[in-house]
Image (tube, rainbow, N blue to C red; front, side, top):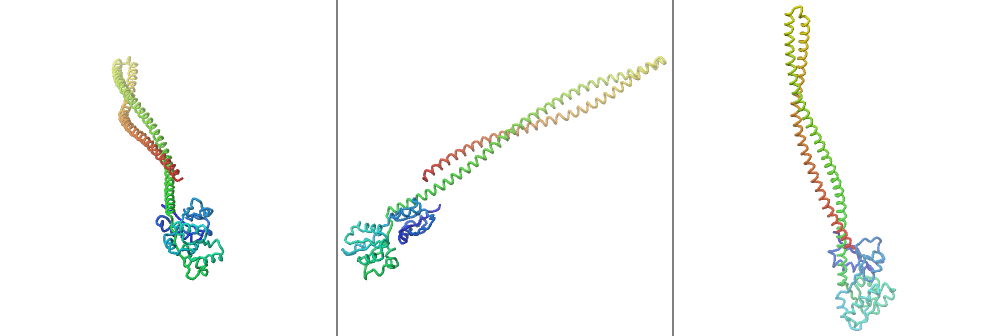
Length: 393
């Protein structure tokens, strides 16, 4: 998770440096300190997460950056200042050297709050006065005090007003630190930033999760529809198999009937063969008797020969029919086992397809359970998303 990025804005660069120093001192391990800005020279498009200013500059800074990103933090002099002021002899005049009256008076207020009222104090707001007025006030006071950023060796008091200092004139430099309330305010901002960051990331995860679940739901719908189509196809296949099985059974029945009919025809053929043989025999006997009769039996001989010829033709035809019937019975004897085997295979296929149908229905039920579970997850995720939105606000 990214850390909070903080910059400081001061009425002058020394004040911004001071705010930066004390903030970094307390929070360098929790935030990223970015920059220090003079409020009179602020760049455009500042992207930091928080800007720390003195309370007197909050409204002015809010003209350049969003108000919710501006935090006013009061600085107070460190204890050493009060010790040094307490050492100054009674009745001496003390000039509080600061860039503006408001902060100068605050420093004076902190000094007097410790009961250090034995001195004559004057605020010297060097940015609000002319150089001559500043020099005059410096010379009127016995002691000059100010924060290090103003009265340090290389700071404005010495770089601009050195000639105004009287020989032996005491200069007291002090550092400021953050008030306890300011520390609490910064901690609160860091906590809120981390919390909002976490809430935003959780929100993004929830949105992504919802998106993925919608995709899964769509896929589940497709799978369910495909399963339904598969189940319908399986049921149709079972119907077709049953129909084919019935047709095979009918074929077996017809074949059996044909075999039975062939047996009956076979019996009739045998009877015809016997009659033909008997007729042939009668014709033969008639020919013999006609021969014995001589000239009177010649007409009868012709009839007897014709009867014999017809009997031979009948016997020959019957034998051909018998051969065909035999072949038909042989084919029928081979067809029936094959048909019965085919029927068994159809039954096995039907069982297998029925199992597929059962599995498909089971998978379809499982998909419904999965869809219900995904819906529940989606509802929970949506509730989390709503809660994150509320908490982020």
